[in-house]
Length: 116
Image 1 (tube, rainbow, N blue to C red):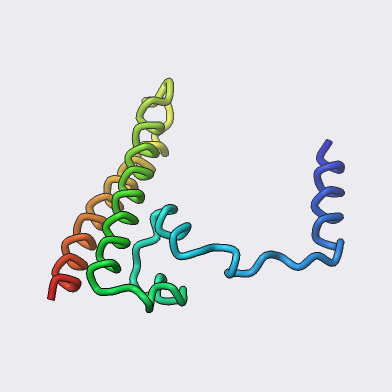
Image 2 (cartoon, helix red, strand yellow):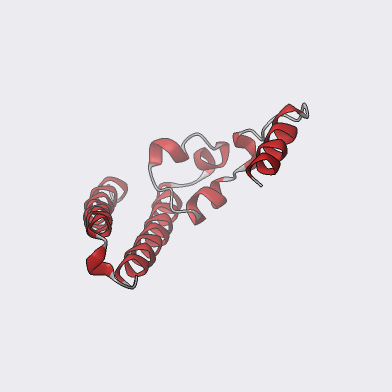
């Protein structure tokens, strides 16, 4: 079975088809996926056409999306059966909580930056 999987990978990578480039992702898709860093979003041409207020709204939406993703991840980890038998999951949960704290700090930072 592992051989079949390797054959599929080899076929798809050696078929001559080039991997999709970054043009496949749009600004809206990046925001929907929770990417909120203005420096990253500036890579999209559409970003430069937006007003300051519209940029802030896009960032806020991305932050909401990222927060929701992190909360779902945290809940999934904490709802695993025999959680006490898997100490590595405690570390994963702590890392998610740390990311949520950083997200709040970033949200406050960008709110100040974009409200000037």
